[in-house]
Amino acid sequence: PPQVPQIVRAAQLRQWLVDADLADDVEALFANPDAWPDEKTRRKAQARWEYEVNIHRDDPMLVSLSQALGLTSEQVDAAFLAANEIP
Image (cartoon, rainbow, N blue to C red):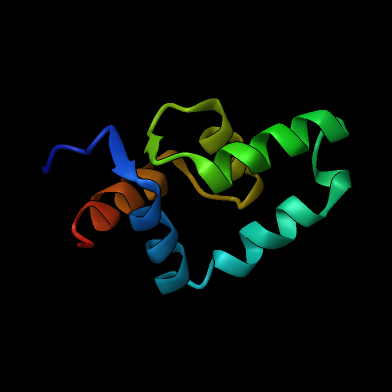
């Protein structure tokens, strides 16, 4: 099996989300304060999502987002593999 990259560029992952029809779900998640333990956590995660250059596979923010989206670990691995192929 191919090696899952541990880091992809944020732009690559965002493009994959568009391709997977999940980009709107991520935006809705950040817009929903009830999806977060508190406002500070939501704002910190949103700032990181918007301004990070790279996304790490084991980043707690990514783990939280993927769980909120209902993605399994295997699906996130597949997303990283696909995103890594996007120029």
